[in-house]
Amino acid sequence: MTAVLAGTVALAAAGCGSDTTGTEAETPAKPTFAAGTTAARLAEAGKVTVGTKFDQPLFGLKGLGGDVEGFDVEIAKIIADGLGIDPDDITFVETPSAQREGAIQQSRVDFIVATYTINDKRKQLISFAGPYYQAGQDIMVKKDNTTITGPESLRATNAKVCSVSGSTPAEKIKEYADASNIVLFDVYSKCADALRTGQVDAVTTDNVVLLGLVDASGGAFKIVGKPFTTEPYGIGIKKGDTAFCQFIDEQLTAAAADGRYAKAWESTAGKVAGAAPALPTLATCS
Ligand code: GLU
Image 1 (cartoon, rainbow, N blue to C red):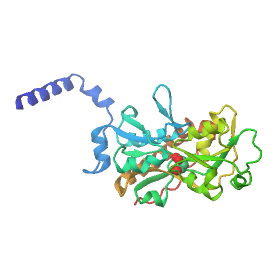
Image 2 (image 1 turned 120 degrees about the vertical axis):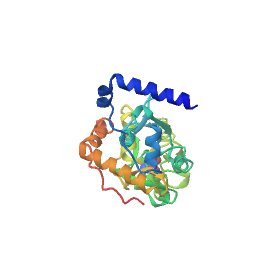
Image 3 (image 1 turned 120 degrees about the horizontal axis):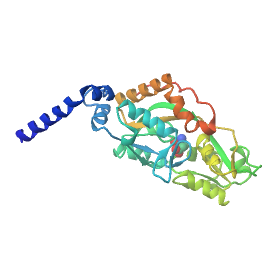
Image 4 (image 1 turned 60 degrees about the horizontal axis):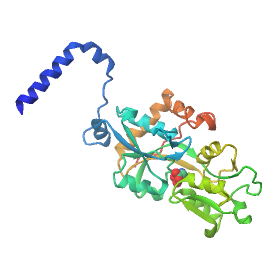
């Protein structure tokens, strides 16, 4: 065993000797982290598993070629980069709204970037870094609909409204619609299908999620345009991992300062949603 190891070292040394200068110049220094931290573990592994959405254009959409695109995906890449991990070494897994806390608790993902609103109920189970964006709940209808003009008109028009199980909009809409008129699916693309076929009259979730669906609808849908909640998007991590929360916040702050945050927006959601927002004030990690 000792002989084999010694041989390996000798070979590696010989390989290095042939072009030391070139290798050193091209390889950026790997970041180092305090032993025992999540960042140290991931950096050492050189790979990371990230939960995101697969059916939300502009934020997290899996293309036919298998690649996932969107602002959430770019935020994940910024965090991975801080760990010294290449985009190619990120495994994206689909985390529909109702599965997010469980995926973190069961270690099926290392973190989640998935239009994920920070709130106290979720903070009992997991922790959040960020926020990195602030959305607001809105309503999407067919282009020719003139009767649904805001949440108040849902009851007045006896409208059937679609949202997603385990989401904050599905909870909030109970104030504005009777249970018998609320239709819940596991993902928003199914709500868009139901709107297209006339099975529902409206879809409710965050404005930027709806914007992606409107953009992909080829003119079939529109957004009412009156947001009625605030939805600060956080990065979901294991409950109480304060060091990892602080690490992620540092990456967000650095990316906002050097333009990578704005670039991430402009290459994704910004194509439809306009100019990049400022990074919101980060919450205290706890
Ligand atoms: N931001 C909201 C939430 O986290 C709605 C979008 C979603 O379901 O991902 O519940």
